[in-house]
Each structure stands twice: as structure tokens, then as C-alpha cells.
Length: 342
Image (tube, rainbow, N blue to C red):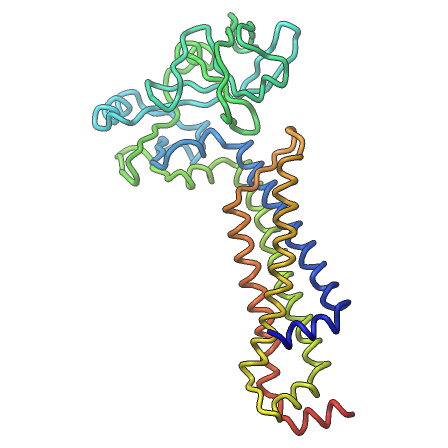
């Protein structure tokens, strides 16, 4: 460790450059991960906030909740067998204020459940994000799909679907608006319970059936992992070039009796110092950015995600520096000294 630190002080410029690059890559990775999580929350927080369980759709739904139609008899049988199960439906629509300000919403109705607040006919409960649009309790809202009006009776936090606020309405109003009495989805807290005539999904599997969610997350996660791979390659190339320049020094150290394992420890110590310093700085900035980011930006970076990514970065850095150090094992002291002198 002493030798590793002395070498880093001697070659400050080189190590500062590689540290700065690792810092920028890790900061970009944290911010993109925060955007991925934020978009995920903005897209499907309604589903993510539900406990782990099983989602059921009709077998002919083609894995799309918009095409799912649960047979009423099958629904009654399921709810009799499982008293904690409930059914719900989601349809996109719009609500208009008295000042003609129109907002896209996801209308939701459900059978009796403790997860969703009960709503009377002619009433609506909205996601709290619509407060920013000037909507308040007591406002009368209209909809192109509904002949009457809805009175806003309450707001609920973090209930979003398809990048729109969720609007909880009464079952009769929903049926009247969308000309259907069939529910789309059955939810049960029982995990992996098969029901004949219905197709079962875990929460993650159900989230994957939502096209916008799957496309967004796949794209952003590919970018995150691509940046992590780049950081590993960066460490490999950097330490390989450093090792090539220090072949003569390694030959002298080996001739003096230093073991290959000790040389590896020196490389790992340098990698550890660089990575830890860069990650701490980038993690602090990315977490601070979360505080100052505008409300309109869907940015959400939990500390757990930051820690997980930091561990991955550290492991990738360790592997990269180790791979670059394999040439040290092949160094023969006399040849290395002669090569260094040349």
C-alpha cells in the first residue's frame, strides 16, 4: 500500500486523469440510472406500489391488459375462493377543468379492496401531481367520454400509469364511459396460483407486458451496463499501459524477492483508491442532484441503487486491473531489467 501510494504521488497527472474519467463515467451512470428509475415510477408507480402477488388476464388477451376481458362468472368464482383478491380495469382518457385545461389521465375502477380508496358515483380521486395544474378538491371536471361531471374529492400520492395521473372513479361511471361491464385484471396476493381459463403473471412479468415500460427500461439499462463495461475496459487499458512502462521496475522488484502477489496487491490498492474516491464523489453529486432536480424531471435514485452500482463498478474495476496484471506473472527479472535499460 505504501509503494502504491508513493507511485500515485509520483505520477499524479496520470492517476488524476484516469480518476477524473472514472468519476465522469460513474456520474453519468448514476444519473442515467436515476432517470430510468424516475421514468419507471412515472410510468407504472400504480403497479409498483402494489404488494407482490399474481395478476390474471384472460387467455385471449395476447398479454395486453387493454384486450383482456374477465368473464363475470370466473371473477365471482375467483373472489369466492380468495377473499383478498380483487379486480380492476384501466383505460386512458382525459379530464377537462372548467377553464378548458385538459389533462391526460388513466381511469381506474376496481371491486372492493383496501389497496384502492372507494369512490362514489360522480366523484374522482386524482394523483397529487395534478395539483401543479391548478386542480384542487371541490373542482368539477368533465370528460369527453362522460356526459356528467366529476367532483374532485381527494388526492393520492404517487399513483401514475403510462406517464399519466391515475383517476380513481366509481365502477358504474367507468362502465358508462367505456361501454363495458367486464373487468380487465384480477389481482391476488397469492403468488403463482394458477386459475383455469386465466393467464397468470408475477408483478415483474405484468410490468413487462406494458410496451412503454419495457422499451424505456431496456434502452436505459443497456446504456447503464454499456458504461459499466467501458469503465472495466478503461481500467484494463490504463493499468496495461502503466505495467508496460514499469516492466524494468517490476523486474528489479522481483529480483529483490518481491512476490507476484505483492505486485498485484499494489495494482489493486491503486485501483481501489481511484475507484472509491471517484465513486464517493459521483454518488454525492448524483444524490444532491436528486434534491435540486426540477419536479418536472422524472429522477429517482434510491441509495440502495447507488450502493449496488458502486459495488458493480468496484468489481468491474477489480477484474479490469487484474486482467491487465497477468503480464506481471510472465516477467523474468533479468530480461525485464535489460528491457527497461534499453
